[in-house]
Image (tube, rainbow, N blue to C red; front, side, top):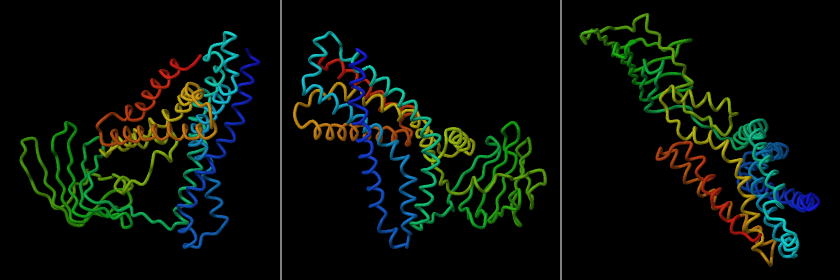
Length: 357
């Protein structure tokens, strides 16, 4: 039995390596051809373009492993079926599940390992690749924001403004609502122009309305000294950060900051959960390749490629729909990330039970 399982791994692993290199090449060429014209127009040096491709390799590996495993599994099983080797194995009383157990164990360890690989390697290199690409493409994104609302100090202070200038660190047409410890309205500050001064927001002219316990209103010309508006400008500027470019610990802090400031966080939280769900596609696609690989009697190489691309397309479309639904808050972020895994797990197990054994 162990001899047969080693034979299966001997067939599977070389095919997997070649398939992974092939898919990495496709991803690299796709990224290069999409930007090569802009690189040349902006006078990018050859060594910089090569460096971009080098930094993109870990991300390509993360994308390629599920496809490569799906192809290698279906191609290996297809060849075994076509050459009647599996018929002999089944005749000896060895079940399909027992025979392919090493592949499933290998797929599980790949899935778990991919979580750590992405967190410790892919994130770092992909961030550097993104920054270098933007530099070569001469892409500049403004950090200014419009019509903003920021919650500060657990909702005790609410900032609203028509416009935030990131370069000058100023707020235009700002309204600031201050609540007391009991959540009652305490102050309303109105200013047409506020400036960040070292550690707080200041203004030369402001209309301040103070509310007492009886809801009586008094008007002031200046912000009281005991009111310190210390929300940093970084929380007002446009958010260009992406969870895809952060480690898990950094992503948790980033999402917590979004919640604290009252900003939309469903999309970021969905991507955070996806960091844990996506690697398990490796384990799932092995079920597909084992159960359906034997359906190909002719043109095994071509059919394995088409089968791999078809399953991958179906999975990514499903994932795109669920992630968009989570972003728009139709479903929870957890459901957005894990629903495709759940659906395809059930489908793969069903097909495995129906497969020849």
